[in-house]
Length: 277
Image (cartoon, rainbow, N blue to C red):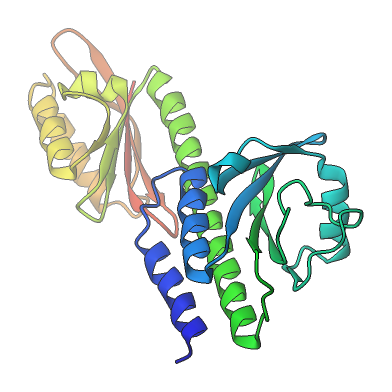
């Protein structure tokens, strides 16, 4: 295994241990520092396109380059011309042709790596004061790093997206006036909204063990005035092909509940949704 192959593997191993719950910008700062050390670059930084008129330097090493503001338009033209592939400058162009001249001063060689960090895009820039050969092994190492960055950032973006969706739908379900209880058939996961937690006397809404939910619903059933009728219909529910029931009456001392039980089945989950009106 060559030196550059070991460095690429080192990058993959260290980023594999990264805590995915941390913010994308934190991951980039960690990755930029790691790439700088692995490649012995003299500078390393992120240039983020904040809007149509502003590109700002972030996560720079050395730090004095941070917050430099650049015009993104000529930079994007260069990136488009190269098909958003990694740009290797064995010799940095003259200042007239160098769109990164504000951050690539007194350097001989540089690499520009486009990175998608939705909603804003970025480029990672590495620079060396001494001329670099950029051997095939080195190019392969950089390509491995680029692909790994893309993979981790995509996973992070997906995680943030699904967290937002989960928060949004949880907020919606918690405001529904009916008590909702979901019990997964896996025996390990269940969920209850605020109305459901109040009805069942639980400490709060959200994730709950199925055993806790089942026990709470059993206690609620046992307090019903028509408990015998409830058990008779429960036998029909669990033996019916439809595996569902609606307009099921539970008569409690101070209120009457209309209960529905519906099967929930997708590729990801399988269980029952209980609705108490």
